[in-house]
Image (cartoon, rainbow, N blue to C red; front, side, top):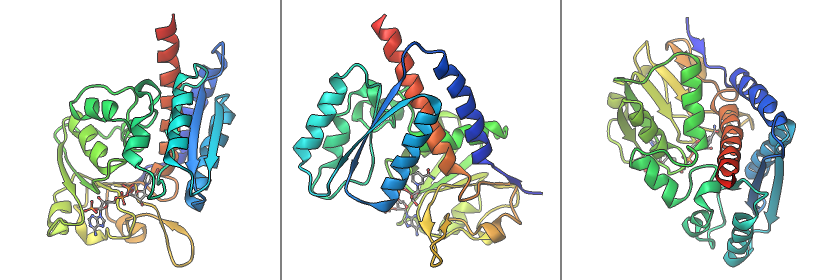
Length: 282
Ligand code: NAP
């Protein structure tokens, strides 16, 4: 019988614990989010982050800019937020418009306020096997989910599909730090199926439906990070849930799997950065 990895349930459990913790703080933690342009998906994500944060007693400030905003305006805002001691965590919602140098903008965030492990200092630490100020939200959320269900990665073959800096790459590195044997696949990978069939844990972060039930072992753990919209407008993952869930040991659904874990992870990181900043100021 397949086990559905329930991200909503775990998110609620994590948020409940955080709410209690935040209630005990003298002052509220604060998360600042920068949103550029009017991408509907980004607006939905940012609203959901704000709502979740406020529900926990975390102050959430969203700075919204039009599509044609100057790069310097964003850089100045980040500088201001870096210097503002009442702001503990900063997130730049991606994607950014093409005329903005994404790397320059995200690297302007002070590493100690870098809530999604975007800056070169924090990614450098992560890829050196050291602890960054905060681990990247989505891969960390995936690990929270695996931990909750007692799925240990030590010695397992973890196949990650996708190599973005946001998900695939850090996911592979964090699985490696858990002593997994890791293979990262991408759009140039040949014979994808021959690799996925050897996976103990298959993590897909692509954004199109490409995982079918003949691509994995029966006892595989399948984690679906992907989000896209079907012709009916409904949200779907990379995995054909209908068929794959009849075959494998564990599977995360879309929606209700990794998505809620990413938000939970963002809240965990905001509180972590807050506590570290308080500790440093003592
Ligand atoms: P991305 O930057 O577009 O990366 C997609 C990756 O998929 C790339 O590495 C690409 O390879 C690879 N790819 C594309 N087609 C492929 C194919 N046919 N076979 C194998 N690999 C293929 O996207 P992302 O930011 O990593 O996000 C990935 C997905 O996760 C998206 O659907 C996104 O919406 C979703 N997401 C979900 C959450 C969540 O909380 N659930 C959070 C973040 C992202 P190349 O590098 O060779 O181009």
